[in-house]
Length: 253
Image (tube, rainbow, N blue to C red; front, side, top):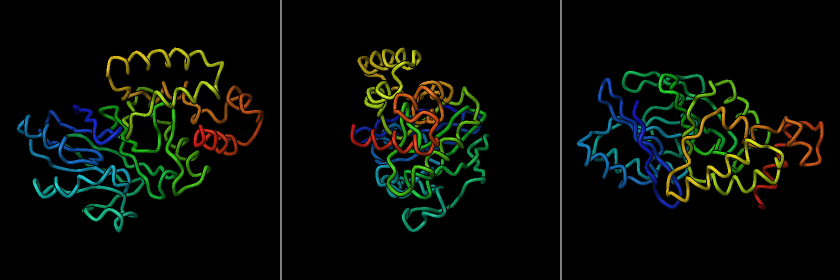
């Protein structure tokens, strides 16, 4: 699978997928149809499928225009059918999806929204996780609880370390500024802060990151680790409580 990052709206990313074996084309979370159509027209491609991770408008607003043009189905969380009016095929955690020559797993990762899902394509080492896991961060708790989101973080941890993480926004540099305040002695994090600054100075996306990189540097995946707990004055605390404190601090950072 070839994956093209498309910057859309203010700081969103959607992802154009091209299966080199079958020639099928898909898109993940098209919050704006026009940039997607521009690339499709330039490549001479026809869109075969739309994947949605959750119902927010900046991830689904382009669905209808793309469906009108190509007649392609939308695959997304069944439990949000009423909130994604363009949904054709509803899925839930534990289901599989087929794209081109690959089979993807649907993962349930609530917290940002009640019914948020991710799509994991192991053959391409690709995880499309919407607004749940970000590079050096996680999504706001609009509908779920800290316990929900921590469970979702833990659900992603068993995936292979070289899994490439494709999230919904370019938040990495602001996340990095927060991360060093709650994990100040993390040498890997400090090295990554410098790398991110260089990437953004060159106008490059910081996505994809990898799951292994996030395990070592993302404080929201490290709520059970002593360094983060000590920085928060919460040594030995329940990781859910630590996670909640992290999220609260980030919300007002």
